[in-house]
Length: 438
Image (cartoon, rainbow, N blue to C red):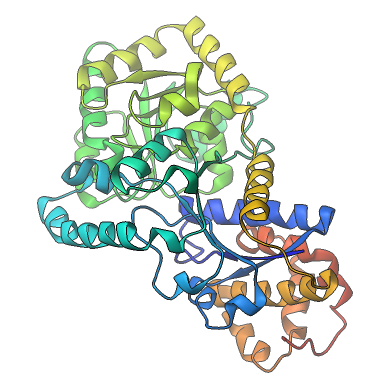
């Protein structure tokens, strides 16, 4: 049996970053496999807890699902005897100043990048394996971080097909979601941005949209995600751009379903989850012809030189004015999206863990309970609404927390995926007054 530890803390749960999403989806799928196979147990911990001195007594494999870029694991985490990490997006190393919003940001971060690159060269042997989500990423890790080929494993990310799927009626979905955001009804493209708008190439996108409008494009451009004031100011100067800010996942799905295309001509993508989610909804994409997008999307979109404003503009006009092209790309994209699922991602990762990390002879039920308790503690540490239960938990009393879960019925999406794998255990212990953490 293998005892798996997954480090899940990537900042506040309130921040719906891709790092949080990947960790959450994978943990849920690991939990389903744990319950069905009983060949391993999985616990969610903080990254700092993964680095505790006795971690190797409790886990046979420590996985950090997404390191978030070029940074090398913390020195303390390297004490883990079987450390397997995931990496997506080393754009700062590959493109340098191009993916920084200001020259001062680049000058400040350049020495930090150089310092991390030295760690990769010096300490790579302390990592058991590295999983990346695309062949493009694998090539970049080999070229820029000097990671040996035998440590790299390509395991693509997945998509939730139950949520991201074609609408019953595109027109009706569009009408309802635009009404919700007080936007007048007409066709629209969407752009899913992030705080690092330089990497997302949003300024060139705005110029391309403005040019397309001058050539007859009668579409709105809806921009999703938090952005700096400077981006909001640029958007105000161009008629038709609507800045929506952060949106819930349910609204994101509807916005994608009602759109005629996702326009994300990023300078760099390690994988491109929003693009995969879009084609899963039958929505074509206009994206970059470099790095991972052509590999992931294939014939489900149009590809442009991200530095060429003219190309981006022409592609928007082409997609808007050609209904048969929209239908063809939609059909191709839906077919391509079926190659991806979080279940498949988790299955391949478990195979990787089991082949690269040794297993031990421990009682499954015993470590299942320990995994449940450890995961509950971790969620209470991270989730703002649950921190009040820590006072009880440090006294080994889980009763109030279990009553909370009984009342909520796993309705909170921020804890659902971490606790549902232990649902049966939680229900069996909701009448217990004291559950001790071993």
